Length: 302
Image 1 (cartoon, rainbow, N blue to C red):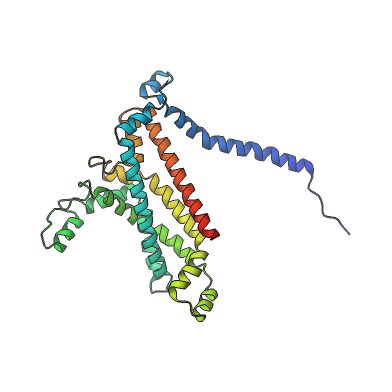
Image 2 (image 1 turned 45 degrees about the vertical axis):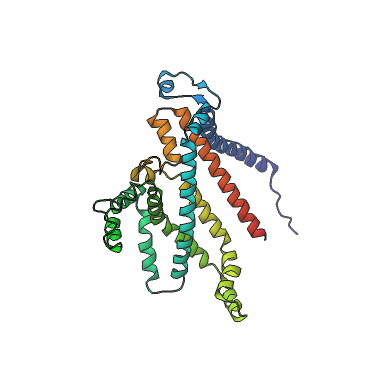
């Protein structure tokens, strides 16, 4: 009886010799820019240093202290977190509702899916311009609708010019662009839920709510985890919508960490301060994703 051929030890060593350097190069490629940014966040480092070729001056935590003393960092963190929470919760609820509708074999489902993808494929800057025109206080559609539904009692409606509503306006624009992808991801998850299990549960007397939380949601857990994780990352690093629609205004009402980092580095020409904002931004996103994965894992175990 023929014995199976054993893998040659030389082939194994050759494979390891190729794999280890590749992994190390990949890790270095990812970490070097991050480490460089963190180091510069503790330095007085500006455009003059780049032009003259002189190294920056180490100033410990001065970049961080200055940003927190002026409330710039705190305001940016609050705006970023509020924006992320609002957009993620809203797009998950609306996306799930649309996915359930499209999964119910309604007429024209394929056509609706095709139309739904339009906002997602539109460039972000173009999306921002579209919503700027809709929110325009003199001739925008929203101004007209508010005037009509209020019976003329609210003739002016400047959402992006009002500090209390500007962040909501950017959030609505983000929802319009991101809901289609969330819907399609959740729809793909819904279509993988076994129909025979749903039918068996229905025969056993389980109601629609019970079937949804006991069967549909567990089967979709992996899709939900990936979709929401992608949404968290996408909205934490959101820059084009904010910069195009409001530029961080009015009065800092829409200055998130992305806008603050850009202003510090390329408007104030203080790359060290910009790096400090980027470091806080990166740490906040990592912690948020880690907590989300921890909560999701705990929920799966229960």
